[in-house]
Image (cartoon, rainbow, N blue to C red):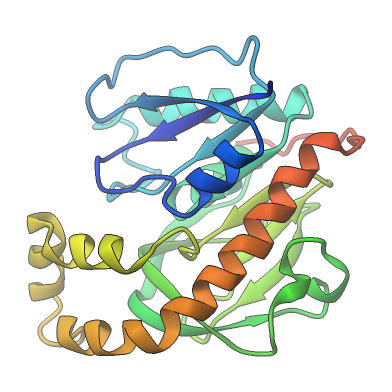
Length: 248
């Protein structure tokens, strides 16, 4: 039975729609909740893969959130061991930084439903090849990153060039959120930290617009979730190709 280590930062950012797929595939899942235990020092010994979830902090806030350095060491270890890795939002940014790329504030925050387009590389990718030329994907982020050296660019949006990349054959970084369902989105819209964040944007983001759009887009998001995350699960049987790390 494969074992998966999951890095969590806040209680409302969870595996979501990925969880039942992993359970159906027979995975044993261990969450490391850095929000509750910021000094935790988990080991990848005995684990076959790593998932790093989202969170409200910046990867550059290592002085305030020392666990970010811990997570980058975990990512580096997983890369060396050639384990499958999935990073979502903050997790994608942590992978990018571990690989030597810069992470910095985006020109504008993406919160809600946005058009995401696959790149020309996506057609041959086992996870992102299911994307249509334009997909409405749920987003919640303020930072972005440069494409790490040696990575394959897989998706972009008008506001964020880096929406997805693959490194080697089994490392995926997704800036967007395929794991959310309708109850998760509603919860995110009512979390006090998120309410304050939206209010600070001076009306640029309207929660009611997000709510109205969700029923129209959530079923397609679930289909993409099943295909993309299903492809990630298949990686656990793939041969791995060794890659050299960037420097950070």
